[in-house]
Amino acid sequence: MKNWKFWLGLVISLVFIYWAVQGLEWSSFWVAVQSAEYGWLIPGVVVYLVGLWARAWRWHYLLRPIKAIPTNKMFPIVCIGYMGNNIYPARAGEVLRAVILKRKEGVPVSASLATVIVERIFDGVVMLAFVFLNLPELALINSDSGFVGDIQSLSIWGAAAFLGALGIFLLAAMFPKRTAQIGLWFIEHLTPKRLHEKITGVMNKFLDGLASLRSPANVLMVFVTSIVIWLFETGKYWFVMHAFDFEVSFFALMLMNGIVNLATTIPSAPGYVGTFDKPGIAVLEAYGVGTAIATGYTLVLHIALWLAPTILGAYYMAREGIKWSDSLRTETEN
View: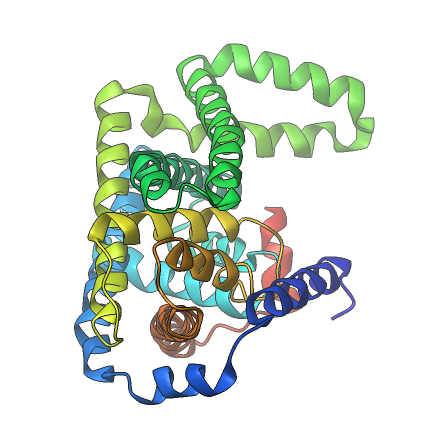
């Protein structure tokens, strides 16, 4: 609670929530929520969990050059990580799953975090692909809206950021010795001498975590798997849509999925409160969905996306007897 990142995220979330509910007709919103057919959430959650299993398989593949760990052992750790992202600030779940993997399998935290960052970069590239693929359709549907132009501008900047990061990581993976030399120069010139040995060790372990990117076939596999993962997640959007009285195309939901997940990279309160909701509502409104229904759908979708991995992650964390304590946090230093 004393962390400034927590308070910054909370303020940003409150701003997005206010923005989302401004002008909302609450009576129509409650009608939309109360009349929804919630049975459609069951296949939606199942599809989402299949996608979560695919994430565990992708992580298993990224870690394979370091240590081959079966996907069934990775899945509980992935669930715990996503639970952590949902209830702790600053995406602490990413560090949490790296620490737990170190405890259980002996994989260095810095190497695990390297693979986690690679995951996020590929996720960002796929999300941007979803956005770019559907921008022409959105422009035709709502060409008078400034929202389209905003998305286009943000997508261009986002593409530059994610593709630039991907390029840097690929170069670092292909030329580890040269990268280590450059990194060592910065360490020696920009950090205290007493920390050189420790930072150098972390850097070398981090570079080990990029080993899976040294093969073009591996890079292609990670990219294809990332597409499959996000198509499964869009499948949940599609099932939950059937619980409400509106219909848009699967491609429209791909666009919504891409935009809301890119928006959740903005600092926010735990669980991406507000930063998920306002962009999702705006996309549906651009497709002509009423504000009340769009808000009800986005809220229910958000809760469903939050609840499933959080309950599952909490179960696995309790089963392992793990608590997010000071002793656990100190393990991130090794």
